[in-house]
Length: 251
Image (cartoon, rainbow, N blue to C red; front, side):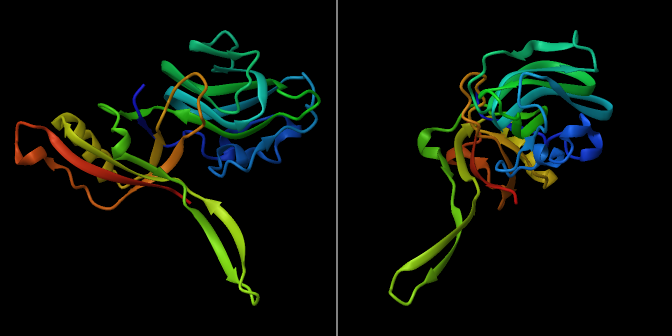
């Protein structure tokens, strides 16, 4: 699969959520992009299931669902409050050992999502999820950039104190993803799609490697910073377009 831009998460407020009363304290963590924060169950450190429901309030089309920083071994996701309403392909894990999962599904119009968590990977452990994404594709890349033209970084915000003995003390605050992506000879259609995204000035999700097996968990809410600088490749109107984009993970 090629790299993807996804629209922002359709799960974005606690008013959308219905959970068992024992699970409400950390609800907002499940859509906080700080993956160190988690929604954690309370009183479900066994194989007893609980359901995390998301009510959209209006019909919503989904074709992408992913989970990051979780400890779930067994779980399933269905829609519109009926266990028979499964996605294509169905999302039903029974022996999961990954800590992040990416699901590429057929377009499905829903009014609600039910996320049933059954069992953690370690016995006698509360179930925990760092991030739960529900949304759709904004843009599939026409082609992935070459390795030389994709430059991801994770710079770390630090406070460095110089000590009297000549050493330093470092306080690591947080690291945020950023990348530059370059293309040459892309089609006018792809360039126009990129321009449409840039024109909105809005944030979106960037998923560099959206594989549905052994996903590495890389999915970032980003802002496109700087200018839109695509132009005809090699000054040839028949050679497509070339340019670069700069993406930085949001706060």
